[in-house]
Amino acid sequence: MMATAQSNLIDLVSSYSADKRALNKFYTNSESEEYYQRFLTLYSNWENKIKTIDFDVLTQQEKVDYILLKNLIEKETYFFNLDYKAFKEVAYVSDFYKDIVPFIKERRRGKKPDAQSLAKILHNTSLKIDIEIKGLKDKQFKDWLMAEKSSKVIYEFQSSLKEAYSFYYSYDPDFTWWVEKPFENLSTKLSEYAKLLKENYTKTSIKDDGSGIIGKPIGKDALIRSLNFEFIPYTPEQMIKTAESQFNWCKEEMIKASKELGFGEDWKAALEHVKNTYVPAGEQPQAITDLYNQSVDFIEERDLITFPEMAKETWGMIMMTPERQKVNPFFTGGWEISISYPTQDMSEDDKLMSMRGNNPNFSRATVQHELLPGHNLQFFMNARNKSYRNAFDTPFWMEGWALYWEINLWNKEFPKTPEQKLGMLFWRIHRCARIIFSLKYHLGEMTPQQCIDMLVNEVGHEYANAEAEVRRSFATSYTPPLYQMAYMTGGLQFYALRNEMLEKGWTEKQFHDRVLQENMMPVELLRGLIQELSLKKDYKTNWKFSTEFK
Image (cartoon, rainbow, N blue to C red; front, side, top):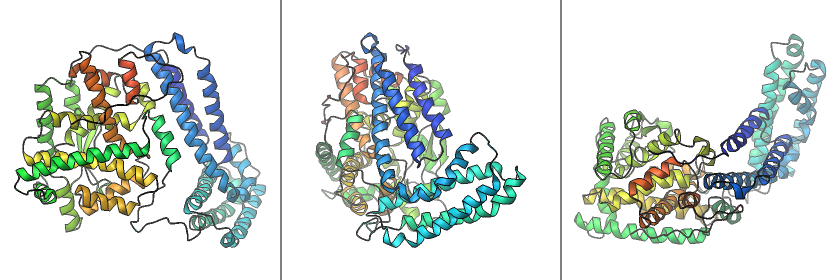
């Protein structure tokens, strides 16, 4: 591959990332006034720093990096301020420990503490907590989100105190003699207080809809800002409408495949037939390898993209743990493919659900999604091309690219049999459903249980798999608010950009190779880069990418 032009802003981007890492390592209590103030200063300093850059003299690569960095700082500042606002609403729960903060700060430079005085402060702080606990019933939070935040404030302080204590304990005899017991007592009190705070909210605040899945809807304003930061020029409602249109298209195609199998319009019965094409326990790794070989051979025969020989040589395979399968019932990928399939300790029902949900026809769309030309190839190329742009990580590029290949392979008739078509359509309609249920959840229009029911009734998921999918979407740190909508949306963006480049005389291989040479960024900015469009310093999203790919 020919190397693309380089940017002179590499060190600037790298410095921003390094500054954040340094501060996070030094200021370990992320729920303290000190932490918030320090990072607000960081963001302000960097906003001022990039203002000094003469945008007009930059190359196209540098202009894109400038816009990416400016956007990243604005995005992180926005969400950081939301966190800070939530902190300030409950910060008073930490007033009792202010006398201990100097000890924690001075520990960073190893200042020898006055052990006897510190022991007294810790003891008095324990007494203050007793008073706080007694008054909790009269100070209930208006909702469970505030209760969770207040609890986190205490737990974060407790962790910082333990770190400072551990630094001196046993190494300083005087410190150990005086402080050990007061610290242990205070630590116990802090755990009790944090636990009580977490449950100290009014009963009118609904935390669990009965599904057992606890998430945090961000609301319409934050959704709109999030879309703008990802350079998506549509409202949440417009994206839901687009997803519903694509959902209906998938359903029509599923009915066509169902008719081919003799099930008429009963697509659910046809899907049940496909689920039962699973391979026996122990044979899934070979099934994955076979599917990988089929997709790679199919793509190479058509010369659609460059597969480096080392990328084909070095991808790995592991088995997913039973614990991880509870939140991710399907295999995942990256440097290696992680196979989700039953273990002997699972119940018979869970074993069958796992096998049915990971049958070879369902997996036809997802093996290439996780390996080549999907995530494994992305990781391989990102490590070798403009790796500093990893700072601009976005699921619209990462997941969108892998989903784009599902669309592209479908159009090239990679699925031949009706079973294979239903397998690929199952995942495609699932990605449409992700947009609908995730956006409606964050808009407050759907609950987790309703999301589960949608996946079971409208997509055809096994219940346990649907539950795990929704838990992964809302109750883990793995998926930020727009993550689930990024698959299909990013795929549509890549597909639209592909069509534009083909109209300009590019081959598919030229387009695909160029994408992976530029590393991660919102697809709209990738478009501006490779089409050498005029870019402004205050660039805002404006690309109305096509939403039709039939």
